[in-house]
Image 1 (cartoon, rainbow, N blue to C red):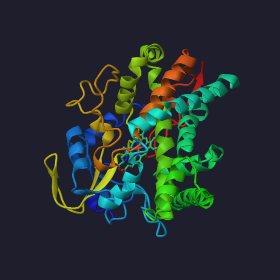
Image 2: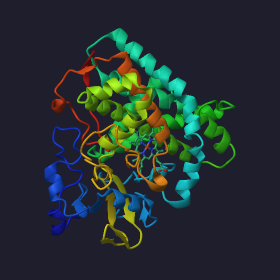
Image 3: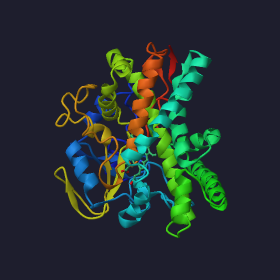
Image 4: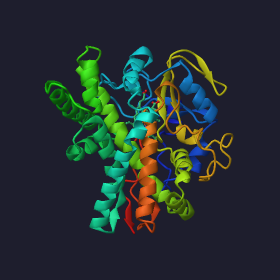
Amino acid sequence: MADLATDRLPLFPFRSPGDDPFTPVAAADRRRLDGPVTRVRLPTGGWTWLVTRHGDVKEMLRSDAFSADATRPGFPLLRAPTPQTPQSTPGGFVRMDGEAHLRLRRMLTAEFMIRNIRRMEPLIADVVDGVLDAAEAAGPPADLVATFALPVPSLVICHLLGVPYADHALFQRHSATLLDHTADPLRAREALLGLRAYLGNLIEAKRTSGRAGDDLLGRLVDERVRTGELEIDELIGMAVLLLVAGHETTANMIGLSVLLLQRHPHVWQRLRDDDQAADAVVEELLRYLTIVRTGLPRQAIRDVEIGGRLIRAGEPVTALLSLANRDDEVFDDADEFDPYRQAHQHLAFGFGVHQCIGQPLARAELRVALTRLARRFPALTVATDPDRLPKRDTSLVYGVAELPVTW
Ligand code: HEM
């Protein structure tokens, strides 16, 4: 229950980035923050510390004084849990701590290592070209989110996991509901159960078919489930996490990046003409857009000082990556998009033990998708006023819901 003092705190997530998709926190909301580590009110009635400076966010995310376990009472939640649904389900290791988290994460590290992702690049290029061929054949105008930004990472993660892309409508719908922090808790529960049932059936089919096959879920069945190291229930939770995190994030990055690059035509041209440029452009896009705009929730498990504030054991804390990535102490003119800067210190993938395991894949997808799109459609133009585009501003992962384009 909120007390009077909590009632007076600014409400988080901030709902007023306004129409500008590139300002993560509006100036008015920034002014209401009472210092770099400050308290804000949550829609579920409680409050959380908000940590906003780059150095403080890094310190917090690498410290073992914080738990990521959302089942702990007092954990900062954006959506009320339903009595039937715990916040964490078996296998969902992004919300686990210590050895339990590491045990599951370690089963995936080799899969996502840079050299293994490099081997996937021809596949990513084929996927991108196939999607571009279809868009070109259908002709302009088109919604770039539906025809390009969403299909590319969905096809790639389906291929990697061994999930049939034909089922994309089902898993995309459930993912969007799960990530929408304003979704009715019962609907969110249905979405989670729907995804678990869907992936459970798929994994069961792999398990009963002798050798499970040459995809990530099949390998985990063969090498971990059959050996007794991993429960089926845990594998289902890992599959849900990978499928959701593996397509929504990159899809929103592609859509927002294209929209931003409309304002920077010389960068669009560089992507087309200069193979060497893409890596730096992608890094700056990740920093500048920081799509995980609601930040990373944690709970202090012992008294700890962050940014000069004493945070007591049990208190909720949120690392606001989007403001940390606009910290002028670390990035000159941080509110400017500058593809020539050294952006690699950004925190868009988080930091510490939970740092995004899919980042080599996300980087490869962004590089291949954006360069090939710029080459295929050099005159690509967004056909609507950017301020009027529908935004995914109630999602844990920010983006545009549609992007009408011509070329
Ligand atoms: C974790 C961002 C793409 C899988 C995270 C975290 C962030 C993040 C901020 C940290 C969460 C936390 O500490 O609480 C992004 C962004 C992406 C992206 C911005 C795209 C541009 C991907 C892809 C995959 C993926 C493509 C998978 C195939 C994961 C997983 C975790 C994670 C499994 C949990 C890691 C752990 O808890 O050890 N991501 N992600 N992500 N991401 Fe990503």
